[in-house]
Image (cartoon, rainbow, N blue to C red; front, side):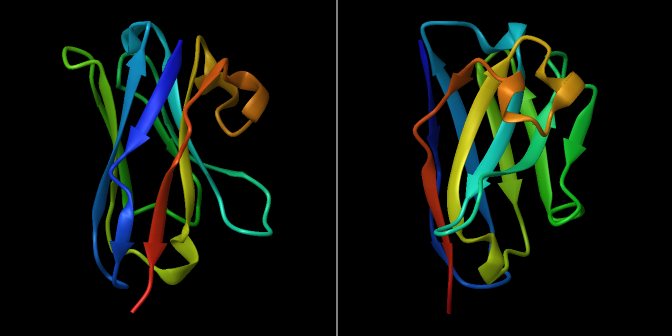
Length: 124
């Protein structure tokens, strides 16, 4: 049972990326999915979360209005659209799944399964 995050890369400030989170060994539709990020020398921080039905979403203040989380349960995939990227968005981005993680979405302990992360670098 694991999650695979992908879609990261190098992008200039103001650019966009779309991250994907795909499970292996289970169905995403039963779980709330969160995205976290960790920059070098910094603590991991919660970025966004979507509940299992996709009708409730949550965002950190630092990304609100620039990032959009969505899910396609038929494709067993959750997406994080990153727009208007800033250098301070540079980090490894992780997705995580938790049965009712949306109730405490910014708390790492709310999640049961974690992916290996994908690197996002914003630089000119």
